[in-house]
Length: 402
Ligand code: PLP
Image (cartoon, rainbow, N blue to C red):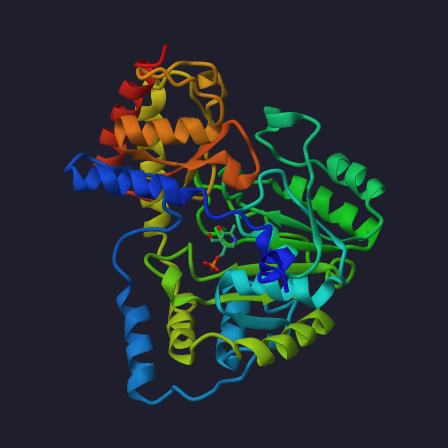
């Protein structure tokens, strides 16, 4: 065996996380007692709800620590359908509880794709879609919108149709709504248009709805149409990690899918994780039952407004509107070609992200992580004071560009 063969060709293609270098720079500043404003986070802060914590504690105390059903606790599978208001469309046999939404996605790719099948993503795919698809031996392709960024990188039915004509081996189209990283929300009509194209082409429509409770300005989540025509092709992914406070580490996600796909996923999952830890499934059950507290959504909407207000003074940045999620998306292409005080010419989103850390202690995520050059993702799930001070520091740093 040659040294270069020690790691599989598949895994050696993965790029290490682009955020690591920014973290290193931020830590260096912290060691020097200089301020750091972290807008890179992908999760909410605050306290875990008592009922979620207590359910897990009780599960340990009462000895619910033996192997469970590999599809997940039956009562949780039922509760998930209630949480999604879909009990009239599905049975618990359509639900698989998994170790975070990540595993649900991986289960789906592994369950439906043959080697070299194409999986289509929207135009700014969340960081792990591509590595997960490649690990399942499928070929990930981004559907690029003909309108470019004009419609905030949203993909239209025509864009999807155009891509499908070129890719006879497409097996699924994955839509993330609301979108991480852009914070956009596809309307009911837009979702229906994309779903229709999938039905015409007989490919799966996978809807990652992980942020679906975090929709602002009094709008409702645009539910996909669920009927006899759509059910054989519709697969939904959701989970515990975003719609509650401090639940990302509990590692519980779920999918709702046609029976044959669900059966394949349960079979697979029974061999590799046998599902998430049983006590955390009890916590998940407590989270999704007993009524949803909209406090988190209200708090995030307020933070979004604060960030918008504070970002008015940012030079070279166009801040996109954020109708949902907790991500603000910044178009920073106007900063390209500008010179920093120490003489570096900014040329990429990575350069801008690095400059903001070095010059202002402001940590964002470069658009390159989402295969979109020219943008930064800014998470506002951070304390108000950090938003205000961080944006002021960023504004000063941007003003110093020539
Ligand atoms: N899908 C999207 C769009 C996400 O943002 C994330 C996490 O950041 C995931 C899936 C994975 O979620 P989980 O932490 O539940 O595995």
